[in-house]
Picture 1 (cartoon, rainbow, N blue to C red):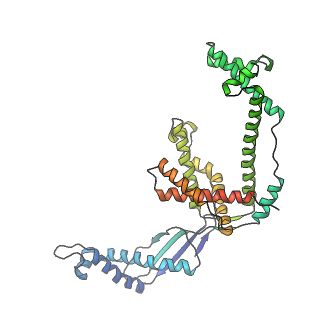
Picture 2: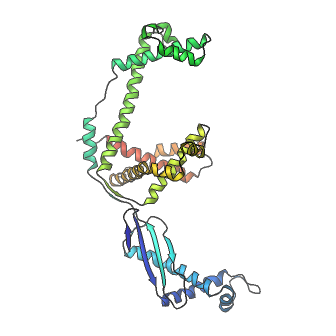
Picture 3: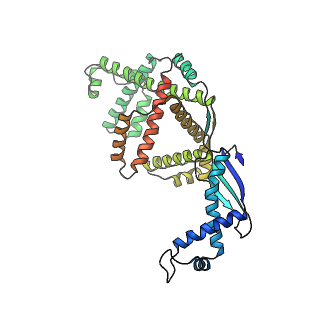
Length: 348
């Protein structure tokens, strides 16, 4: 038995004795007898001797080898305390009568996660979290942007080429821009400039709060990840890369192009892209595993009412997607969101 630490897989090499293989040869012949459809005999009723002559010894030995490995491999993994998470990939020597059968099996191991004191980490970052107010400078810059946009639109309305209008608006000094008065704000649905300016400040504050919240969540997850020991099979990283490629293809399709054209333009192959994405895929895989492990330890689940509502909505939006896949993906996503919210609520 060997462990591939890099890919987090187990490899088992074993021999099945000639005597045991002979026993399985008898079972294999009976299986082939049940499946045989031979002229002159009802299905499954042909004599063993006739079946043996028809299918040949090599076919019986191959079936015997498959049965033997299928029976014995789970016992070996269990005996060696190797929790696997996918079907093993098996290769065997050519089965020969009277000789042992050698086989090799590789399988991804269940992830192994050693968490730090994630409550303490989250609480410490939560204690340092401070809401940053919108500055007068930020507010003024946004109001100036509205005035500059009005100048650009007025130029276009007067018949100026859009590109020239944009260049003209950018070149204007602040004092030359349209005045932000009550008439200016009425197209936005406000009666007074004061009300509009207040709404702009509030919107800026909300946007800043959202960005800060996202930055804070990322900081918590990065801090927990940095102190977590995670071992996981390479297949999970490959799943993440596949998802990243799928999303990129969708994004490019919405832009009217394809992944193949993008690769031609950037002179990159699929292998190049996958290699570029590996660090991000590794982080995504580890983060998912960490969130799942915290959810398990803290008994955190997705809100069932919200889950059912989103499942029904998603089924209508994606009628051709398997409902079970939709439910599973949403359940994991909402559970992870619940874990992140729980971490944000931790206090020292």
